[in-house]
Image (cartoon, rainbow, N blue to C red; front, side, top):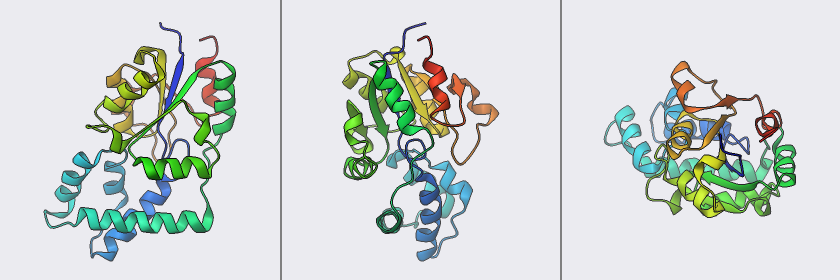
Length: 218
């Protein structure tokens, strides 16, 4: 098995505790337009690229569902929440980053979130300078669950995907990382792994700090 020389991280729900905000404000934004969006609808589009999430949303709510207007409203609501309350870190984040830095492991972010918002969030938590590369949803042609974002991140680190650990919390992210050839670590956030997720990850930990164990001896 290849020695791990890189680590690639999803962002929302993995580095920062924002998935609960997406859940809350997707539903509120949809309600503002007269649609009853439920938890399962939001979970179904976690980490999905827009070209995949739009037809899925229209499949749930009909072709007239105003996806871009609802998405814009959701973003406004999230931004207002963060401006008022800040961003919560996921447990063990800096413990893990410090450990990996000490081992000389190269670090990247691979997120479906657009670059402007990604950099804003990373700056707000004081982590923008902790990563060697940041690859965002608007920087690739095909987002998750397509492997392109992980392949791009590994390339930017100067490493083959097989030498990178990928950290994810959502099924779509797990599939993208596995398809790229990464070693995949799941840190569950709002939902626990289902039996059908098992082929897509190598290990599961309760938090990022616990995931240090994945690198011991690598």
